[in-house]
Length: 359
Image 1 (cartoon, rainbow, N blue to C red):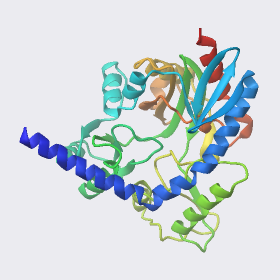
Image 2 (cartoon, one colour):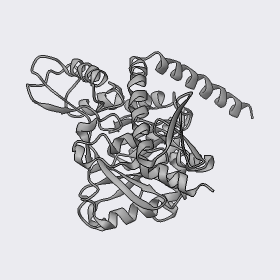
Image 3 (cartoon, rainbow, N blue to C red):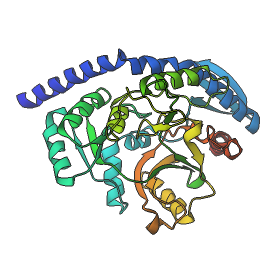
Image 4 (cartoon, rainbow, N blue to C red):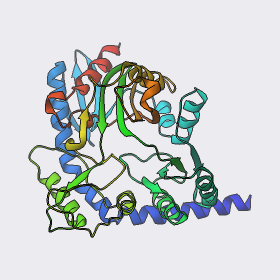
C-alpha cells in the first residue's frame, strides 16, 4: 500500500512539474498566440455552415456557438460538435484501449506498450526486443500532436520524450513507428465523407537563414495571413529535433535557396500546403476498411488515421495499418487543403445529421 502511495505521489509531482514547464515554454506561448486566428476562422466557418443549412447562429460565449433551425438546437465549439456520448469519447481518447479493442477485432495495429515514468525500463526493454524507431505519446487526453515524439531509438530519447509526454498524461504509450503516408478518413454514421493525405510540414530555405529562423518566419506568416492556411504553430519540439537529427541536420543548419526541408514527422501542425484531398483516389476496399474500424467503438463521427504506402491499391496490397480513431477530428483539415477546388463541406453534413436526428 505504501509503495503504491509513494508511486502515486511521485508521478503526481513529476506530472505537475512537467505541466508547469510546458505552460512556461515558448511552444505553449506560441500556441496561445493562435487562439485568436482559430476563433476567427471557426466563427466564419460555422456562420457559413449555418447559412448552408438554413440555421441561425448565435455566439453564446465561452467559445460556444448555438445553431437553431425549426425549433431544433445544437452547439459547437471550434471543431467540436454534439454527437457522440461522453463514454464513447473517453474510450476513443484512451489510445492503449483502442489498440487493444482493434487488435481483438482482428485489425492490424502497431506494436505498442503502455507504461509510465516509474516503468520506463519496461518500455526500454520493449524497444530492444522490437528494434527500429518508435513513437512516444500521452496515452490519454492530449490532442493536436502535443507531447508526441517520433524517431525514438535510444534510452536517452525515450527518457526525454517520456518526461515531456507526462505533462499531458501520467499514462504513456510507446508504439512502433510505421512507414508510409498519413491519411485521415472521415466517417459520419458509417458514411464515408472525405479523406486527406497529411504530409509532414516543411519550410523552404533562402540560403541565408537557419531552420530555427525559417520556422519562426513561417509561424509569423501563419499569424499574419489574411486568409488562414494553418491553425497551429510549428513547434521546435523533440519531434522536430529528432526528425532533423536522424537526417544529419539541426535547427542551426542553413538550407540552400529553394530547398524544402521536412522539419517534423508528426503531421498535426501542417498547413494547407501539406494537406491533400484524396477522396477520389482511395481504393474502395480501404474506404470499407476504415468504415469497419469506426464501428469497433461504435462512434458516430470518426476520423480514422491510417498509414498507407499506396492508397490506390486494394487493401491487402496497400500496406494499410490503422493508427488511431479520432472522435473530435479536426474539421478544418478538410477545408484547408492544397487544392481549394477539392474542399469538402463536412460541417454542413454533420449539422444536418445532428438536427435531423433530433425529435
